[in-house]
Amino acid sequence: MAKTTVEISGRAKNAYFESVFEAAGSDADAALATIKKEVRRLGVVKSADPRGRKKAGSTPAAAEPRLQDVPPEEPQPTTPKPCFNPYAIHTINVYKSDGREGLIAALGDVESLDNLKAMVKAQRVPVGEAFDTSDDLVSARAMVADAVAKRVSDRKAAAT
Image 1: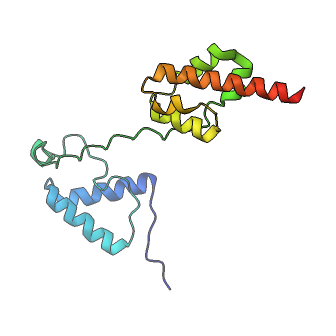
Image 2: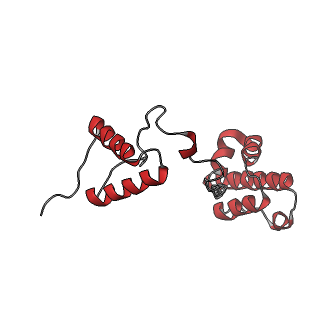
Image 3: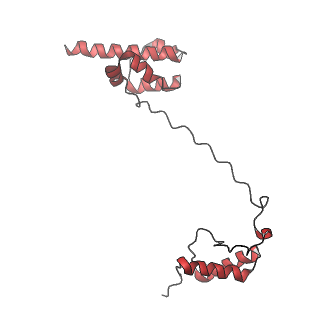
């Protein structure tokens, strides 16, 4: 089976596209039609820009795409915030290394009460019923710090 694709690069590629545009003249529609015909003939054209390189002064301004001819781009969707990782702050380790105030400062990175509750549930911190009904994020952080301190002291007492 004969090879139907031709890979060209460098000067040969530039010369090829210059010949395509010279054959089409200054009409952009004729240039596109010529390129489509050549693509069918070659099978594959590996090029990022099908218009090729333009010679200075060879294309009049009327052949350039005007702003109103270009379709408006779709608005880019905003990137959603990454999901909250309930294990991002390991409460017991932070308490052991930085103390109660360090844990409260680290819990300052948790921006919502729902995320704090998810972290407490995932790490099984025994906070009590008052935490579930709390609406204040600052007092909830203090409750978590107190519960972690109690858990650490209970572990120390059990170990002795």
